[in-house]
Length: 211
Image (cartoon, rainbow, N blue to C red; front, side, top):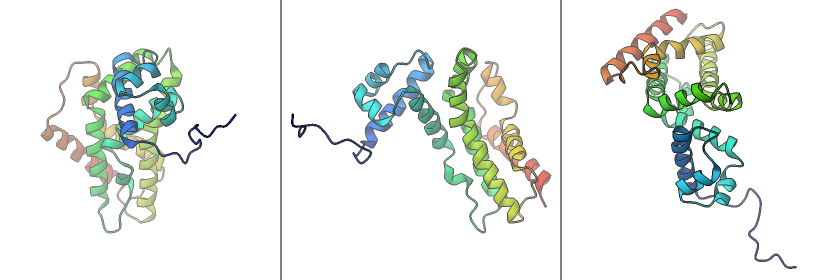
């Protein structure tokens, strides 16, 4: 039987970026509202206004879609470009840009809700928690580790263990505000409060690792 009417297969088929964006936004919405287990690919397709086949053509399965949704959210606030170290740019400026993006990300309503979902369901679904960590926090730590390694090689900082220092940096920037938001006893920081936290954290970090 002839297959001339069948669409061509393979990675060369173009994907519609608008549909991909709609699917990611729908996934973010439903994962936050219903959790990982409570969000089906059918529901995500309906929310995005596409067919389930379209969802699968962009993302192989729900696990992949969840990971991409988390990564997309992180990249909106902290694009990979921020972890580059352009010649002539002070290391303080680079760290300040990363810190501002990270602070906005972790204290956003979407991030707080997602963390609450993970706290509630993580013990029953550790695979989901691992996927979130790999797509979000681990990506940031890897980027910071590489940045600190480069900064040390150029003599801008003196960091003996870039991985440990990367973890310290993000913990400093996070501060106590994020925990208060998670447990519902705080309010989102104002622009001035956010700037003060970021400046204090970066200043302390740079003084600790200055050559």
